Length: 209
Image (cartoon, rainbow, N blue to C red; front, side, top):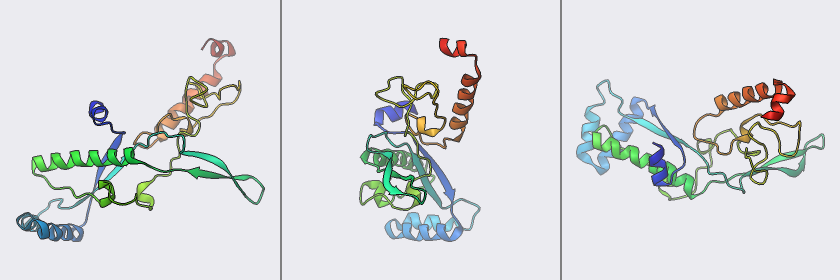
């Protein structure tokens, strides 16, 4: 799969199918009949059988790390006088094309095998803005203190230690150089365990490392 992503110039993408109820499947079959009558009739004839006749395709994809996507301190303050966090975040053409290409590859394979057809929303096909609801974003803010050997390109080193500080460490998804396309929890736990092991090693061993 990695060679496909590389050849297509895509970010990491995950696709999943969610089964729809019979009424949704029937509506999809009726709509299909408007543009492909024979195919629509065939789909409607299958609704009485124990088949998955309608599914919703969902995608989750990596966001390219960009300098303009960041968390900064706002001029607004809370009731204790502490500056609030301000999120600067937007997606671009690479994110859209990655999701589109992955969906089109699945659509081509479904058509080749004769197991179904895929209809993409207009925004996936570069028509219109990204949706503004929660379907287009997650609740995982990652990469704000990204990891790098070079202090000019990151905030923490390979052991999550902040560059230039001997006793300041960060454990969390903010150290991810890239967000990926899957849930980050297991990676966060692994990083935390690795950091805990590093901090509990004798000082001499840490200095050698």
